[in-house]
Image: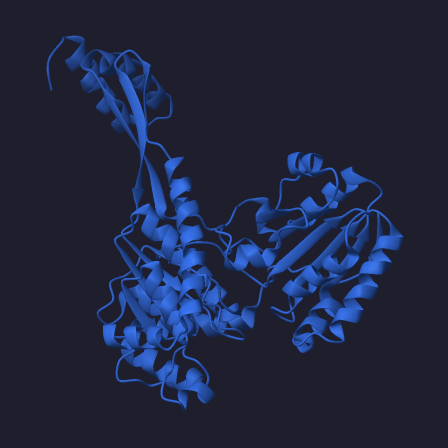
Length: 432
C-alpha cells in the first residue's frame, strides 16, 4: 500500500468542552422547561415565536409556496423511501417454535410508541432528512412522531417566516404528527424530556452538528437514539478502467458537506490516482461550493494505492466508510468481500447523492468507523424484538429440575425456590 495523498480520518474524539457545555444546557432545560427552550432559541437563533409548534394553517401555507415540480419530486423520493421501508418490514417475521415437547418460545416485533425526529438546517436546508427518520418510523407502526427543525436565518425571517417551506412540506408528507421550529440541543431536550405539552419520546433520530450529536450521546439511556453521526464520509474503490473525472466529481460531492468531511480514494495504480487528483483540482476551480469542498479535500482527502483487490478491501474495511462507491470491473468479488460500510453504491451508474435524496435507501448512516458494528437507520430501528415463552405443566416439571440445580450451584436460593415449588406441583400433576 502506498499513500499518494495523506489526510485525516474522521473519528469520534472526546471533546470535553462541548460535552461540558451541552451537559449544563441539558440540566437547565430539564429544570426550567420551555422557559429555557425559549431562552436558548433567542440566544442562538434569534427566534422567539409565540408558539414553536406550527399550526395546520402554517403547514398548508408553507406547502403552497412550493412549485408543483418541487412537491412532485419530494413525493417521488418519499415514495421510494416508503416502498423500501415496507419491503424491509416484510422481512421481519414473528417467530414461534416448540424447541422441545411442551416448551414454546417466540418473538414478536413491537414498535416503540413515540419518536422524536430532528431535521437539520445548518449550512444547507437538508429537508431530505425528514423522510429518512419519519417514514421508517411510521411504516414500523410508531403512533407518535414529533419533528423539530431549526429556524432559517435572518434573511428569510425578514420576509416573514422562520422556516424553509420545502422542509415543512417534507416533514408533513412523511407523516409527522407535530412539527416544531426549534433547533439544536433545546429541540432534543424538548423531545427527550417531554417539555411543555410534548410527551417524552422513546427514540431520538436524526443528524446534526457536534452539539446535537453530543446531546444525543448524553440523552441515551433516558431514551434510545438511532446512532451518533459525525461528519460525512465517502470512500471510492476504483480500478484503472474507471472514469477519473466522474470519480473526482463524486469525491467533491461529499466534500462540499462540511470542512470536516472524510474523503478517501483507493485505487490500484499510481497513474490513476494522480489523474483523479488532477481532476479534483480542476473541478474545484469552478465548483460553486469550493470554499467548503477545498478545505475538506485539502485536510481530509486521502488517496491510497493498493497492491491488489484484496488489499483494497482491507483498507476500505479499516476505514469503514459511511458511503462506499465501487468503480470496479469485478463487482462480485468486492460485493462478497467488503464488510464495513454504511451503504454501498455499486457501479458508476449510481452515486451517493441518489442515496441522500431519491433512491429509497436511508441516508442516516454510521460515521467515524461505526460501520464496524452498526448499519444505518431502517425500519427495524423503531421496533423492539421481544421474546416470550409458554410451557405445559409437564414441561415445567422437567425444566424445574435443571433450573433448581443450576440456581443452587450459583447460590441463588430464592431463584431455586421458584423452580422447586413448580417441580413439586407439576410433578404431582396439579394445575396452577
